[in-house]
Every structure is written in structure tokens, then in C-alpha cells.
Image (cartoon, rainbow, N blue to C red; front, side):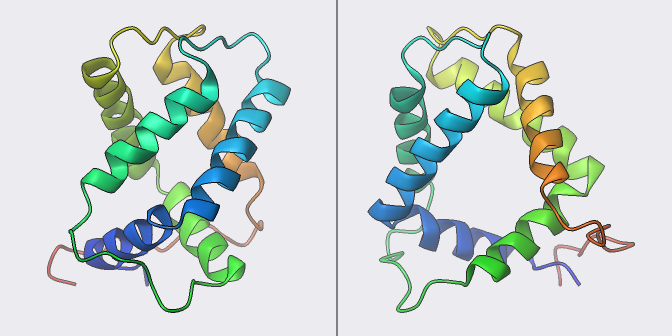
Length: 145
């Protein structure tokens, strides 16, 4: 079964509150984008953009999210990410929401290709890294789950 929206929020906020994870994720994501999509140019640079997006994400977390006593294992994170990434509805909504958020909060950022195309490519790349048996569940959890 998929985690509930509350479980996802808790995990994301726990991870987002860890400075070491932010620095590594920012560096890895920019490196991945530069290697796989060399024609994509950021204004401001990729690291600055991602740090701003990270801070924006963290600002949405409950103020009592100080971080966990123990972090989830890499396997736990991979399983959650792959389950979510395999859901087309989540991909479409996340892509739309992220591009809308970037356009509203960072209007000077320009993408080449456009934001939606870039994120769809990144999503497909992410999904290609998942184990082949990560098809995802038949149904999504309801808000009451």
C-alpha cells in the first residue's frame, strides 16, 4: 500500500530539514541535469534555483519538524519514490504544480526546453532508475487512509 499524504509530508519534511541531505541532493540533481540535459540553462544557476526551491519546500513544513531521530534507509526512500513515480496521475499533477510554483515564485527563471518538458524528462529518468518490479499499487490511498 502507498503511504498516506501525512506520511509523505512527514518524510519530505524530515528529509528537507537535514542540511547534509539538501547539499548532497542539490549537488546530485544539478550534476544529473548537466549530464543528461546539457542544453538546459538556468537563470539563476541550478544550485541557486534548487536551494530556493528547497527553502520554499521547507517553509511549507510544520514548524515542529525538527527532523527525525533516525533517517529512513536509502531502501525506504527508493521504495517510496518509485511507488510515487510510477503513478501517472501523480506525475502529471506534480509536474503541473512544480512548474506553476516556479513560475509564480521565480518568474525570472527560464527553461530551455520549457518547464513541463524538462520535468517530464527528469521524471522518466527517475523512473528508469527504479527496480523493474516497481509498478506501483493498483489503487491510490484515499485521504482517509
